[in-house]
Length: 410
Image (tube, rainbow, N blue to C red; front, side, top):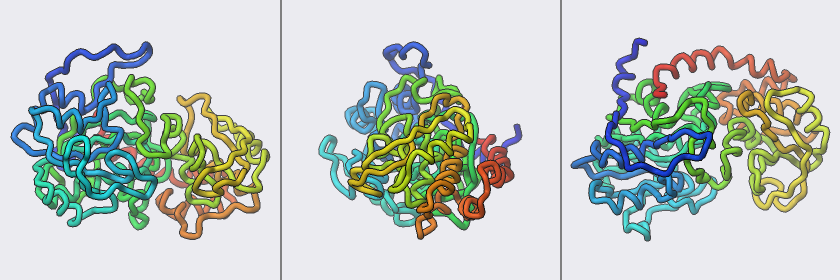
């Protein structure tokens, strides 16, 4: 395969030393080693002589559930000088749309800088003020374009280039597999923090692969980049096949099952229906006042692969319809190998609009930001069926898949 100049600049760290033997993975799982595990096992060799800071959150943990910041702080082989907190914060105390601000971490004494909603020169100034030479990134992604941590990575890469810093991504598996890219590709005029650049709605990549893609295709100039690869991971593996612990990457992403449906059902954030925030099953429970069993029946009639829909009633404790009992569906994935989250999300939008006269898009057209263009909204409003909506994005998706292939590591 012929690689572009930018691809060659999107470097990948090849570590060869091994860590001490760890406990065997449960039966049926592979012995997956994260980027951090390989970095530490190699004695932090690629960081020697450098002062480093790390962009991370509660998902930055070891196999035995210790936070990587606490581990590095206690290890004199690495000079950890700062922590950079994204949305929800480094320790994870903030809800959606919030962060923890600037403070000193009580556990380590390290300065924690807030990166949320910072980009460009403002974020570069934060990196400069921190005094670090290299910015590490270690956050568990969930595989969807509108999950903001990948754009925190993008913004940090752009800012690191402005500040003259290096970036090292400590890779982790994509918990919903890296088999294929699915869904519409964002159009550049719809760029926001839930989608900076033209990638598919379900990108099917790891954060390390995305970093290479960003460096090779989208940044004005590439940043010095190393990716410490995962080992032992197959692209077909779901999270429970890795043997790694699950930590909610954000308050409304409690389980790997949430991540499985999120790339499709998050589209309900762009409607007047509840996407299940304020319940124990966010993004699996969807509903509104006035909805009943007709929605589940209509969705089940489509015969979507790998999924069933159950008539459900629930009362969100916060967010839309707080404290009110509403009707809708619960998404039950029974065969994740054939389940398509994006097609499923579109099918639920189409059927909700058909069975419930109260259906409406959010007035700010948030759905256009989530899907990356006006096309999904306008097609559904015009009465298009599921196949017509899905067919509309296929040419752009095919082009993205071709570009994506250059940057895959596994």
